[in-house]
Length: 250
Length: 254
Image (cartoon, rainbow over all chains, first blue to last red; front, side, top):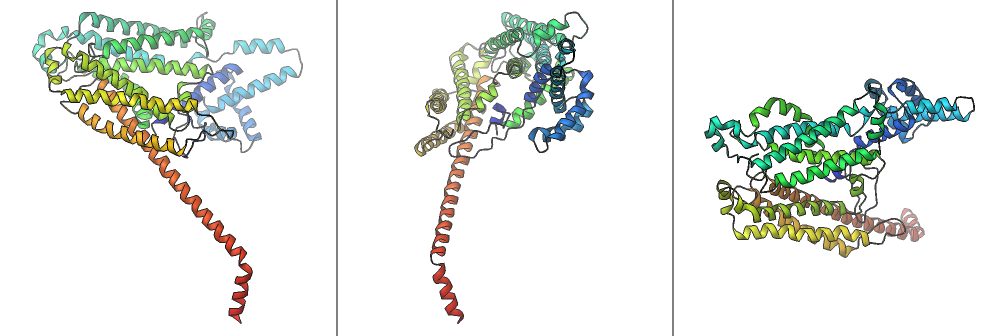
């Protein structure tokens, strides 16, 4: 069903008036990624304690037989072990949180240490669900830049016959410059965001985690600006008067 | 459509780098004598990706995503919302074509000279009619009082009117698609009008099929209820006359 796209998650089965409708949505894997990211950030899990977490997760899931969560974990454990990520990781992160909280509640003098270690263990930005978007933007803006650069057809001067026969309309210089500027700026912004996601070495690592973690206002501003930027560019470039308008062949 | 969304778009996005590496210098406009439309598709890809990434941010920040928001609407309102968005896009793209085609280079104008005034009127009329109808059917959900059991039921009359409207729209959009996008039509070139008309036709047909399926389900439910009621009445009669039947059978045995 097409509406599965607009609602990837079937969990919300609202009652409908006179139909029993299966909207046929597939489980929202990206949603799972996000939940995993949130869970791991809250729990402060990192790659180092995954192994530890897996055994804890196994213990946790076996203690609740028949629950949806346990079934889900049981079904994905083997793949998670191979890939080093997955649902088990979320469970592991939750178990790790519970374990650390029970330890701190149980007394002992390690409360401050626990807090410090929790702060120091932040989910790596490479787990961010937005990273795929930035990488796609890099690729798409490179293609866009190249197509915009060639849209004037200047580099086909020597083969004018081919150019005329192709049915492609040469771009207006101003619009060509605009298209190139749009893609160059996007490329710079997206590359910056992507590089920041892979930064594990510089002293700014903590700052990037704050700026690009879940719920970050800075990232929201960047994404809103990019969306607005491309909305305007799409209207300008793909309308009838634009260089990528109907029949222009660009 | 879900196939398009779940398979085609990720495939395009996945293979874009390979496409770029291997074919870029052959498909850009200046080297190839067939139109490539790289700029057009790259522009839409960038817009789509920006919005997709924004939505990922919303999900990660524990806000409701656009997907969930759309899913939360009751009955067939999600279908009407998608129809509204696409028919609005169709109308804007068609108006853009209608107003600006005389400003195109002469070579491109040739494609629009043969488009009759009737065709333009029809192409503007269909989305213009679709927009208020679709808006009415999803906005009405806002004003409907949810019942105490949490159900959001439509009356039979409303269902009938909805079915009539979606059937009419399906009948309007199918010829519109043929007229506009076949060679010689106003939207036969790769562009916004072409894709929006296609999308509008698909979502209208999909929503129409959704309504038909629900309608058939309702008929099936009524028939099942009637059958169960008949069975219950039959059992009741049998229970009432059980003594007489037993006596009758006993007499027959004697």
